[in-house]
Figure (tube, rainbow, N blue to C red):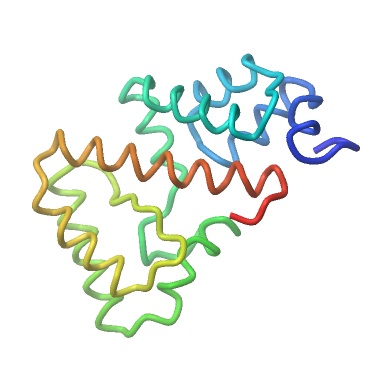
Length: 166
């Protein structure tokens, strides 16, 4: 960030640097652009509320870009954030890992995008149970569930960006 930390640091960053910092939280360029343009934020709560409302208003094409920034559950994490978030899968039994891989394929075939879940604090078997349950959703319901999960992940990553322990 800058010499300042937390929210003050985010508020003080030049636009391009703030955009890059926010893109580590969510891969939607439009989400990051709108959050940068809405600065300064008076509180973390204001930032989180703005992040949620911007995400809720994003077109599906931007949600697809946000999804592209996440590895499959159970796949090799592509960032420190993903590794931290999916830590519960790291020590899962091989049977769980294979079932997650198969479930991911079935999910992607049915819904046309990766299975996204806020994995922080969840074990491999829990993530598999959630995946199995969500396979029963219709596409419109699942798209809304996925957006809710994305908002949770964004909040955790924003809190980390601000120096909090999410």
